[in-house]
Image 1 (spheres, helix red, strand yellow):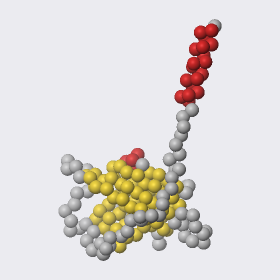
Image 2: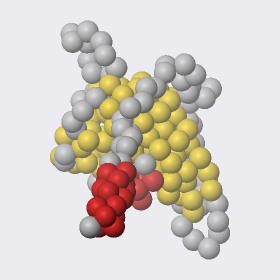
Image 3: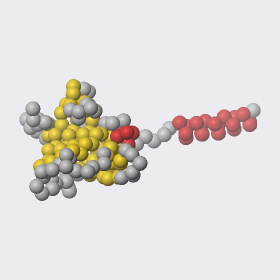
Image 4: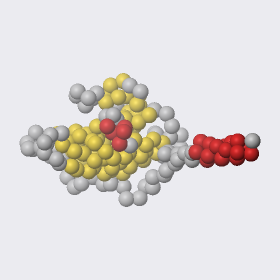
Length: 173
């Protein structure tokens, strides 16, 4: 009886120690507005978002869907770079990680008709988004920080990183 009670006590202690895991709240972050990425000289940049959308893979067009799609566009006289993030419609913060990137919630396109370019696709990284609290009479505003790792899709191993940190506003229709 004494051994059974001792064994039961040990089992209860181990069960309570290993059944109660501390959970980290992945949305417990803030993004400061220092060191925002700028737009290079002789380049135009656009940071916008569209509600209730989804990114169409075939033509890189927006379609009706269940995401908030954030779009970064950088254009100069010879090329255009697009970066899209598909975030949940609900909540005031979101976090996209490698799993989300591999599930195509982050899309990248570099368009340059006169360039000899190898196609790259997002393979890793992180995107953090936070709705900026402001007067309700102003349009919705988000602060997005992203660090996306791109890699080539062929026998040649090319990698690149695209980092942005900027405010995103509703797209003009």
